Image (cartoon, rainbow over all chains, first blue to last red; front, side, top):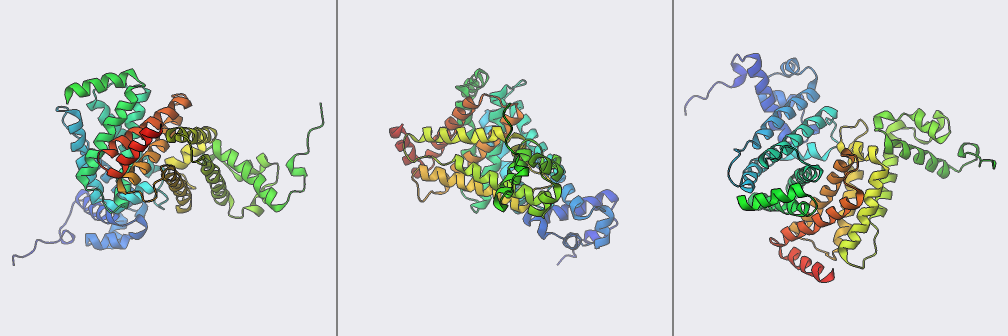
Length: 217
Length: 217
């Protein structure tokens, strides 16, 4: 056996490194348990540090740690949407969805607890973080659609589909991660195309877009 | 001028009548303001009674009154789904949606505050009430589809569409109640038909249903 690397607790970490270490430990715990089931003792134990040290970095206790974890998860989630602006649009959407669904898979319990609401740690701040992710997702999709001035119908269709994806993710977790993630991804892409098709019959901007997508595919 | 009827405050009301009177006043206030902006004084004033009387009926204060109002709104909302089991299915859906959207229109601010989350009055109990309405909506739709044993795909499609309707309602309020409510209703019905169509390509049960719907229309 090779000697194991010193655990983080025994290294002298910078303030930033220590903060990251605590956040990483917290995020792992919040990913797989409801916020109610995570204590600061758990976070201290997972990070291999003392409880007072957790409090020194997060004097607001669990609420502050939860919000910081959520902000860090939100950043990670927004990276899922990074996708080069070329190639067939529905393929780009499928790749972004792959990353998004992998995130959901990796943060299952925390994702459900956050989005199902009613958690004690839910505040207007946590709601604002989640809304920020939704807004970013909508902006990414409109960028990819190369629409700079989306009308009401297109705006609503994109926002409705984002909600559908969110709902599908929750139901998917609820159904024991069935159907298989690749099926779910393709199904959601098809739902988006169908929703655009329905909207196209009511809205000229969407109709032009659907024509362009068909030529592009 | 004819003499005005005595206001409820001067009539001797039964306990049940008084409770209903207070709930009605509270629900009207919660419909058009965020829960944060409603005080027990407002409820007392709107009902024409004293603040101590409101506390006598709702010793848990605003939280208890909010939850009771929400339960009463949830019951009202569930009546929107009552629809005879005959005639073309998409027409039945349109009629139920008409009633649902009228409810959303009448409870605009409260509806948004409730579903957007992060409100101080949100608890696991309020979340459970909202989930109960969603479950009832899904059961109604499956009853109308005459499906007693819905498979995963059909179950998910119905739940996803219910979320779409909810999201559309929130966005519709956010967009100043545009498009006109009749357009929104038809658009949502079309979205449901399109979603079933997409799912039919992946699921035999849904495919059989779509065929039946086409024959039925």
